[in-house]
Length: 104
Image 1 (cartoon, helix red, strand yellow):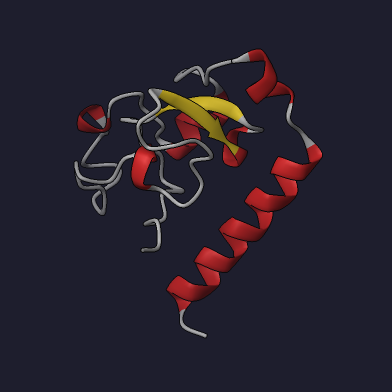
Image 2: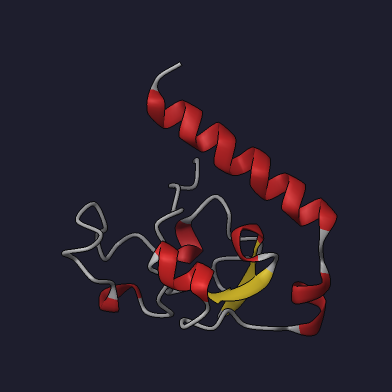
C-alpha cells in the first residue's frame, strides 16, 4: 500500500468513526472557529486562499472543503459537517491539512 492510500484510508476510517460517534455539531449548526487549537494545528481557514503557503507548501487554491472526501454535505451547500472537527460545519470554500481529493 503506498503512503497516499494509507493516509486516505486512515483519514476516512477515523472520519467515519467520528461521524458515527458524534453528530451534535452538525445538528446544532456549530461552525469551526479558525482559532480553535485543532483548527490552528491543521491550518483550517474558511477561505482556501488565506492558507499560509509557507507553513503548508502542498496546498493549492483549488483544494477546498467542497471537493474533499471528508466534506459531508453537497458541494453546493455553503457550510457542511466535517468529521475531522467532530462534525462541526466547515466552509465549502475552506481548507485544512487533512484535505483529501474527493474520488470521482
